[in-house]
Amino acid sequence: MHNITSMSTKQVNKRVVVGLSGGVDSSVAAYLLKEEGYDVLGLFMKNWHDDSVTISKECPWLEDSNDAMLVAQKLGIPFQTVDLSVAYKERIVDYMFREYEMGRTPNPDVLCNREIKFDIFLTIAQSLGADYVATGHYCQKQTTEIGGEPVHHLLAGADNNKDQSYFLCQLTQDQLAKALFPIGHLKKDEVRAIAKEQGLITAEKRDSQGLCFIGKVRLPDFLQQQLKAKEGPIIEIPHDWSGYSKQPDEGATDDQWHDYWRTPFQYEPADGILVGTHQGAHFFTIGQRKGLSVGGKQEPLFVLATDVGRNIIYVGQGKAHPGLHRRGLRMTQSEVHWVRTDLSLSVGQELEIKARIRYRQPLESARLYQKDSGLYVIFEKEQTAISSGQFVAWYQDNELLGSGVIE
Image (tube, rainbow, N blue to C red; front, side):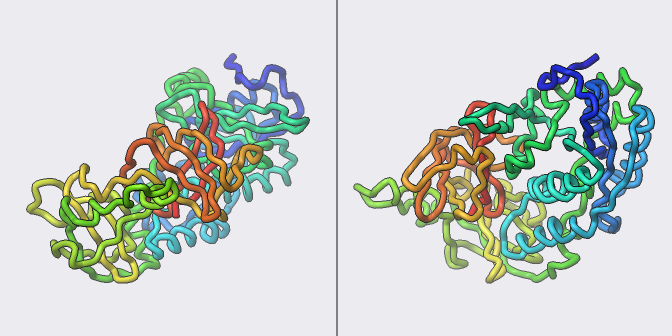
């Protein structure tokens, strides 16, 4: 039997609803919970109906739903499908369109966890008498008491290659109180071995790619459902553009340096040369290399900035281009979220942390600075392609403390 490290006693009569996605991770999560004595119910979320933008072989929901049902049958647990497509469209898809339209780069997976799995799905689970919801995320939870109150700690998964704590960076203490992550202490190959041992149909199944519960989509097709194509110029900015050498004066304050480090470079068409055209600035993100269709350059072109208002894309040659690199970022206060609310900063306070600005990025040393104008993250080293609309998450040791939307 495979024990879950955070559960030492049999959890008889405690009901858990597992989000069975039709993948190996949630399948093994359900198996482990059943082994621990939980009353387990499997629920498959159907979040999408439009197959015209999905690449069917990658993640057809029908096949996933069928696999989830077969796993539930094998484990001898009740199984249901719930249709959350209306809420998913309102909370995730419409949000994506809005963000791209404003020239920001959204992260639908983070929002899906906050708005769907641990909100609407949790409400449904509780209506079915559940004490907890469980997912197949590679992360861990511990609960301690601080000042006489329970505090839930969101910890990285034991498998460094699969740690998914970043995707849960917007969860609240109330949501964490109801969450279980049964495979967080395991490595991926151990999870597959358990699935194989138990004869689960998902044991060898490839990990799904793409949008949370939609599957792999053709993003341009997806976006073009609502965002119209509109031709505009691609301007190449040279490595030696004069704006890169402008720094605060000698004797500048820390605040002035922080603002310099976090402020994106502002380009004008006259700062570079016209090298091609695109079909809509809102379809591109900072750091993007594919889809520019501009040849004849010594090094690949990367998107440095987009001006959605004037429909201009600015690009630069090579990964080392100075326009791709910045040391800082800022979040407006309304878009700052502390998982550990007891550690949130007051104006004037700072905190040494590790942070990442995208999933799978190694944690980087940084400091948080709480100011009147918002929360700043200043990294020790320059970061590549900091994109507005993405989430930055910060940690101490292997605990995720909070996150926010990059301004």
